[in-house]
Length: 350
Ligand code: EPU
Image 1 (cartoon, helix red, strand yellow):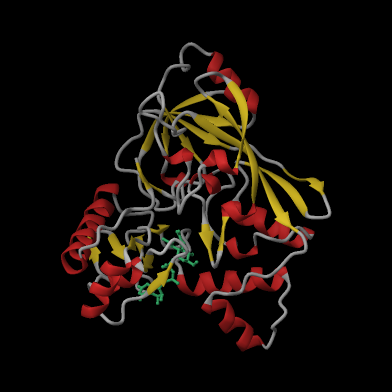
Image 2 (cartoon, helix red, strand yellow; image 1 turned 180 degrees about the vertical axis):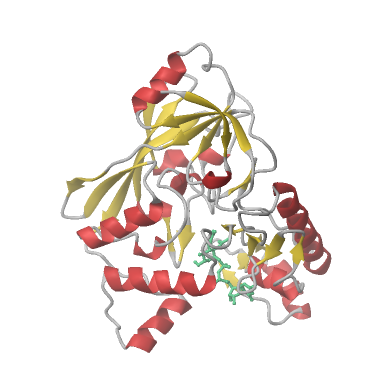
């Protein structure tokens, strides 16, 4: 394993922001992590784990040692009467993994097609779309502890999944605190795909596809292709227009707060949650504040979906992390002033 110096990170983040890693190590196996841990030059240095770079905003050069995870491998581990257990290396591309599973006869992740990023990033923010979250199809994962130099396995409960959240997004600040950010490197993820397969088609966009096509008994491949078409129509391709997916989480409020907002804005898009709280569509809130299509420098609000911030300068004159954060703060302020709601960014700001 070689540690490279002064490495450009523009190709490794989906916004296409220009920044450099002072030092970067490519991790292709557990042995690379063990070698890093054994090397006195790097053992105690701060680290930043980079997957597909699809959920980060780089605001400057990265000083911690960047670990670029490139661990590969796709295999069926086990088939039982109740599930397929399929394992993928953390460095595999998420979408290609979903496509391989669906086309190989291991369905269950089709609603999560076309989400940018890698397999290792998926549990970090518990990715979700169209009625399925990673935690619904998760079995376990293997990670490497950079402090102890040992590999370990976590089940779903130990990952502490929440809405776009997990133990991997938190930094441990005390002995009784949980948090594995900067400490654990995810190496392999195992998915539990329940049998018999059942389609998840409760989302309006999918119901529309069934009406349009007259196909009310879609196969996993049909749903995979519908999801790809839905996302392509609504969300920008980061290879064409840099972005990091939804820039803010959908906020939750109490029924009282929601009733208060409905009294002023009857059209607000809201969904009741199982725990009694109400989830609001952040995209609608931002749209209602008039942000769709607006820009600050080279940072813009996508014309078709106000929740997505985009790089309007392309690769020649790319947006800076500072411009993205200035736009994000301006949006947060106007949503707060109009609705009294604080939007929380979804990507990790580095
Ligand atoms: N809306 C507007 N204006 C906008 C954007 C949205 O009025 O500019 C309204 C829509 O009409 C719709 C509602 O807001 O009624 C929700 O929009 P949408 O269905 O597009 O979903 P979302 O809440 O914006 C979430 C996830 C997406 C995921 C989709 C589909 C979050 C933060 N985002 O988006 O995930 O693909 O649902 O399940 O939870 C991501 O996390 O990066 C991501 C793309």
